[in-house]
Image (cartoon, rainbow, N blue to C red; front, side, top):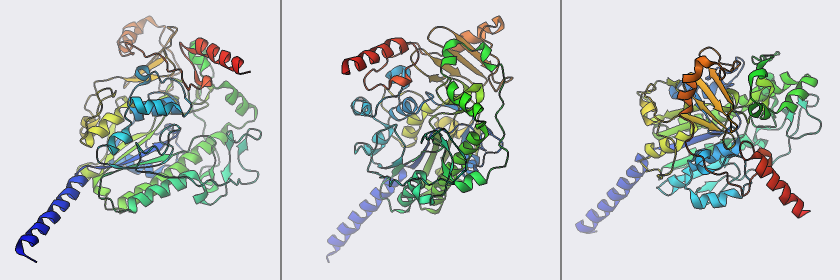
Length: 484
């Protein structure tokens, strides 16, 4: 072999190695999406009996956003906002939509995984990431296909409303691998064991504690014999406007009281949170054991909160704290030597995730993307954000959350105001107290100045609230009549 050829081959090898190193300069991203998890975790202190050691460990070494809130208290609008990067009042995506909506949205916007894929990332997904959209090749290098198994329940244990599959709160006796979240976590572990020559984005979509509240028996058994109820005020509803009251799922609350079942429901919810934590821990342990641990950003979030009897309500779909406050942690493995864990107490919206990950990856976010990057806050938890935290539920219905206050204005002009320094349970609506007129005006200044018209194609009629409720429900009824 001639000297010239040797030098040529050495040059090619050096170029290849340089390319590999350059590719790995971009951080990997482990993106943990959780469904319906409220603040009943150890690191948020929402329930004293919560068992969440793995998420607690992550929160202790990353930035724990203890006052984080969703863009909307429902899976579809929340995930649409986060993944497409646009607030409901700017996109018009206020309610729930049939899954076919994504085809037109993918033509209009660039999703977060698609942005990363188009900028040098391999993207891997499993479980519930979008609300409905899966395995689109524009977004994903690979997407895991679940293997469905029939659930087997422990006989005589737990609670179920009639024969409802969704209103089920029971321990299962299946093998772990029969459960969706175990399969999803196992896929994530497999991806972390692979050799990667490009940076990767790994989205692990954990489904629990979404209904039904079913999970392996041992997570029920690990909880105390007596489950504590959340603080509930008997006369809590007397100062709430009609629109806010209409969001409550009162039938569930009445049924659980009638059946003396609230403790069973709460036990099942806590068990499912522990089951979710267990599977999240499996993925985090795999990351720690992998060669990618020092170059991976971990982002953990839930799409919205959940009521477990507070304000005599069950599920989400309100503009109160229980439905909007969520777990949210960011841990940057690249800063292990300096990062000892921080707590950010200012109000933060999940809409900020898109711009944050774009900046951390060295990628420019599309100009239309809402929110702001949290990079400054990751360096200093006291760094102040410039944009307000706003939650939408139906056109015209909005909540503004700050460090110490929640202000709600409904489409009909009615209001709620809560001081979280003295009223963390939001029991006392101060909106009609003249003493807080200036405070209301200050908070109201952060409400949307303009609001997009509601997208009406593929809409799910049951989820329509706010200014469009009467008109859109009437239109849906006419459609049904024409079909018949």
